[in-house]
Image (tube, rainbow, N blue to C red; front, side):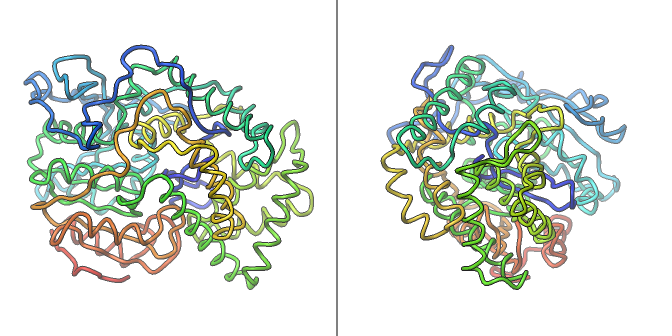
Length: 519
């Protein structure tokens, strides 16, 4: 589990849920070189900035998608005749645009109002690692209004799903790590096992997907977005990014400010924070959401946190048996976390905690399985594989185990429930990763770009509100337009009527709200 930046849908409630998890149960990578070219992608590693890429050949920019009936996604149903699928060919390495290529999978539903059509509206639902091809049809009703005048377009980013998806380990390996690796190690043996599992994860990525690993950066995906824009025939990019999708949107705006159309960034990643900064923000954000939940049930937050930490401590010593499986401390943390992404999910947390205290771990384990993309047959999706590959290609930070351990007291003070896990995760996530990361923090400055809506929710646990303030500032004066949603959850569009109206007016009519508009 890793409480990072991911968007998915909690089927139990229908509420948008996003966070960030890796289903491997451990963290890190390996020092073994990957197969093929393992050099960093088209980036100046001295300055951490992406240079201008060479011009793309006409064979790429002149593509025309061949829209066909969509196949059913893994474990799901085909989306129906109104959705059509295609692929766009992109360079593996934009520094070598005439070289190797990979297919990027697209899905599209055409605008219902052809006469009033604005253009295409591309989506990224976060992760990194979320499949837009699989998710957008599931969210069709949520985006019904924009869908009247936009072609709704989802895509699997490079390294995800049908776009050369990264694979790192088997279901059996994931299940074993999930139940045997302690995510909050408190002994030398547990620390060694934690890092060993991380090394095994990275070694698996290198064996199975090594040549692509250096080229899964957000910078490369932003360049893919611009090529997709051209192939779809749009003069400007119209885009809706959620969670990690806001980082992608900010990167696009920085690289292609003159091509920015109407961009919406909802549940915003702080572009100024490095890996430790993100962990610190999330420690504060998850604790804030948990305290708000406790207050909503009439509990004193201090007493409620003590109650939850007692349960987690007990599970750390003696996991609960659930059939042939076990509810560990790490899985319980995952189950707690998933309910904090939307206020409508809070009753599930009450029920699950009460059951666990009575000795039944079924409810928390079911929530953890949902968050970890594990189905009833024990099969896991590879979203967490893609997530780590993209994150570690982006970030050049590689905190040591000693540095992570030193953060534990500070993080525990910020959150007695999530602090220790998030402190250790700073080291484990990209531990000795097979390829170098691109930079410490992403670039988002976009002077000259059209106004971009930046929506932050005050009770957001995974991407705390402060990140939206920072993003609006980084985009620049006259570009970043901050919209504040006073509420709970991760992502405001579709849950806040005020935010939904504001975003729809911007997308459909070009109406830019005043900076600082509050819902």
